Image 1 (cartoon, rainbow, N blue to C red):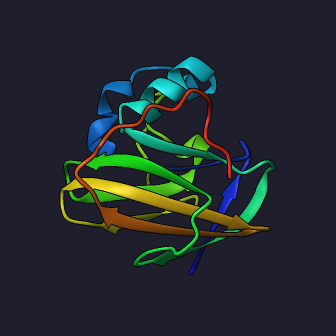
Image 2: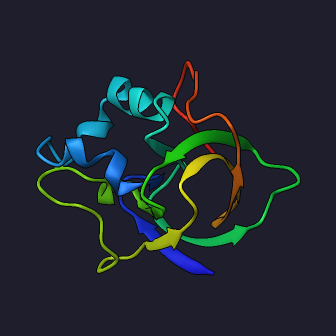
Length: 142
């Protein structure tokens, strides 16, 4: 279990290699709903709006029996960052764990990222899947 503190009411999960092209963009490029939705639908980042700023306890599982949402995510480097939305690549910075968050090593491939939030407790599971993109019509909330 680890704690993530967000000041943007958002938790993000992504392979930094897939959003490196955003390095020179504004640090809040994803705050535009169209840009956030495009990145999620491309399978580059899973942004989870958690409804409020603050600290959230994060637990990783092998699989969730009753996820609230599933986001398909591509992983090319084998390393995924999980942290606050404000830690996504942009503004000349890439994620690190100096201010929270964590890196998780998973085999390269596509995943069905299952998510569930119960209050300040967030559960995630990376389940291998053939699909690496999404077709959401609206932003993802848990």
